[in-house]
Length: 574
Image (cartoon, rainbow, N blue to C red; front, side, top):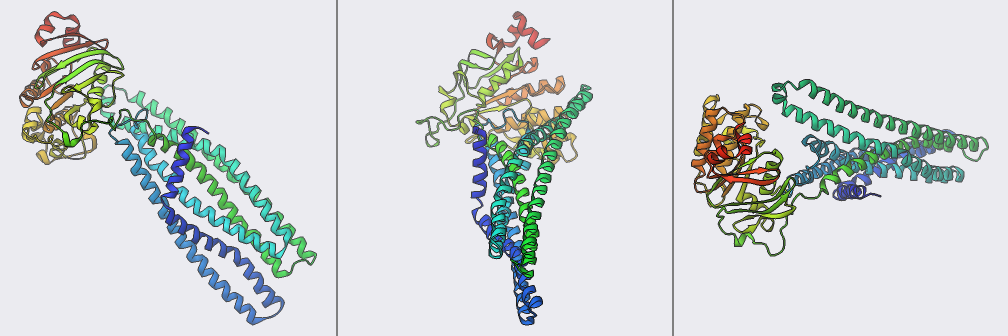
């Protein structure tokens, strides 16, 4: 058994254990319901024997009254048992969704690696629902087992042969049903993976629709989604065929078993070993047994799908963090927190394409970083924002390695504003002040941040100004407007160290020059790193570092490098 499957079974067990009380109540009420259902044929047989065969009217009325009471009890058991099961299922699914969201948002990251956002959403919705449904399956399965046991006991009372037939045949049917569910389990897992992948690709295509139209890539994007959607459809059809095949075979076996019970009961009645009422009870019980046995087939299918979904949930919950969220023993605690000066040191930094990078940035300095290869810039941002830890070397803040600092404190001290940062649903102003100033600071007001980034012009162009509603991910704004609002949000946070990645790729030259001057003015006296190839932004830096092939290739003032270094001119001015 693989590690993923073991973790998946732990997820299933914990989901049920977390809902012990409603599941236990549902099992009790389900047992009452199924037990009552099994007793109905017995009571009918007794009524026939006393009221019809023996002509005892009082006995007939008595057993009819008992039958009415049993009907009321089994009806209440079904109603409230189903309510308890549904509550357990929904609650378990909700708790799994909460756990998944917490894991995805955990500071250490790692859960999103190799998974599209739409895929994670599918796991947190459909897979969580399927695992939660196992609680109802447990209740239904327990009730069906009680019905079978009561039916077997009654049949034993009527005839040892019939009782043994049911007691021996039922476990065999259950075992066969379990074996038949294995193909469904495998295909269900594939179905969910393909469906999640299709959802993730669809979400990404919708998010980038404007870009796709701009570059004329709609046909290629449509072809890609059709291919992935066909794969998802094929997986769904294979799972449906497996489920239909399982249900069909189980129904056939169940029908044959019930027919055998009825045949044996008929032979016993013909031989005079059992009476007319007992024969009616036996035949009715045989028909009743179809229900519990069919429910076992449904339970097996639910458990198979639940196990497959639990494995996928376990994969997210058990994902290895990208960085160590709990620092080593002896780290500086919040009680001993000291003000951040903003001195950055990259010592022999090696991560991905970066190879032994050494950069010193003094407190209050504005430094530009030009990367010939965009992958170098992305790797640098990951290390500065502690989205990943270096393979070798270190990033130091005020002489302390980031890996020795509390993760949340490190990210509050160094704010990395990435190029593709999303906006949130809300007003424009709410997006600007979403982060809030760093503790003990607040010199940069929202108005100053909006002016420095050019967001004030965006607000003046909108119908309700700063109170204009912004849709999710800022899709109601143009690319340039989104960039300015995202930059304003980063500036308003007033972090001791701000790292900005290509904040002006979608704006015109005049706006870009204004943004460069605004960043320089607002960030005066604070450490700022501009990871960009924009000449306007690099012109306001104190110095620039050129990265080529993962190493520092040059360092100096923008104007000097532009005039003397060919690689720099190619990267910045080409």
